[in-house]
Amino acid sequence: MAEYKLLLPSMGEGVMEATIITWLFNEGDAIKEDDSIVEIATDKVDSDVPTPVSGKIVKILKQKDEVAKIGEAIAILETEGGSSNSETPEPRSYEEVKDQIVQPEPEVVKTLEQPLSNHSDSSFSNQSSDLYLSPLVKSIVQQENISETELKSIKGSGLEGRITKEDILGFVKNRGVIQSAPAQQSVAQQVSEVKLQPAPAQPIIVNDGDEIIQMDRVRKIIADAMVNSKHTSPHVTSFIETDVTNVVTWRNNNKNSYQKREGEKLTFMPIFIRAVVKAIQDFPMINVSVDGDKIIKKKNINIGMATALPDGNLIVPVIKNADQLSLSGLAKAINDLAYRARNKKLTPADTQGATYTISNVGTFGNLMGTPIIPQPQVAILAVGAIVKKPAVIETEFGDVIAIRQKMFMSHSYDHRVVDGSLGGMFLKHVNDYLENWDLNTEI
Image 1: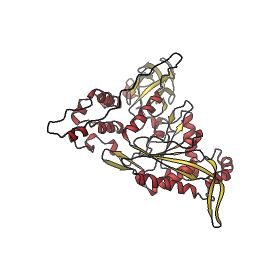
Image 2: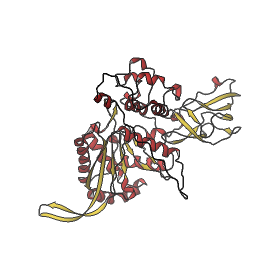
Image 3: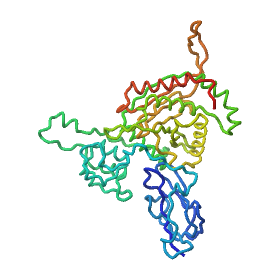
Image 4: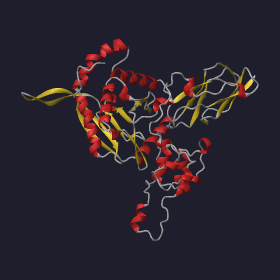
């Protein structure tokens, strides 16, 4: 018999740790190769971890609600065979074990993955090349103007001592607001260096009969992400009302034959994504990210699709290389991701790498919304409910009033890099592609 340490496997780019939700077996239980042994939760999705070997669980090292780092042992197994751990099979990655998982595509531009020595801020020297910061931590460092000396004083709690979001936020909280300015600085210079902080939150009064509901893990993640996005990106939103009569007519003409042929529904979302992809190809500077004073122009067009979950939370699965998919391919990818999202079957790779996001607020009967940008993207589109309206139509015989299918779209964008002209022209192109939808389009 040999001892085998079950390690928490790699679960995709940027995922450094996971929380144990529940063990599916107990100590002493026999397990078979590829059995799902434990349920875990990352900041992206919930997943099962299978075992790459058969044997018996001798000891569980990480209990429910405890956090484990990638590569850390979470259980000790007893296996048949050699007398040492070195003779047992090598641990396999999550992607290798879960055959349904597509390997995450490597980012074409890897600037956000580089050590801090490539940081755009000149205050960081090559001496910091041994520091690794995630994009989120880097953005906080930049926003708070944290120096190299201060950064090196932070004790990281992440894998191999890496600085996590909690570490950097804790440092900022205790750092103080205003640094003393040299006497020779002008008043204007001193004022420009003062970081304005929000007023302290007013205490909440809890009255008799009020119910206190503790946020779950996913809701806390969403809350942090939304606050971080508003703190990072100055949001601007443009609106347009679109005549989607052709789109509605085309879908009505094709949805029954498509469902009969493919066994699944044909929604409006593939059409919206097709229009967005074409507009991104017209205006590629919408498909970017910001790293300090650098703009990362993305080669791939990966569309995030905001999806409401049954528990009321939100998740954004990603359609990779959406520009390379046919209309039918988009429909299949959308239906597959939506189904797996609502049934908690997404993998970490399914929620990573989005370069632009669409949110369908019309699903809930809303006419329009002002969506918050998912970082590190710089724009997001919300599509509202489609409603029948009387509209003036220009014809060769003069203007007439007709019943048309209308929909509002709202485009929120990061004003650091997307000005009103770019944000507005992009939205107008999406509008034009939808209004001029060809009724003879094949699917």
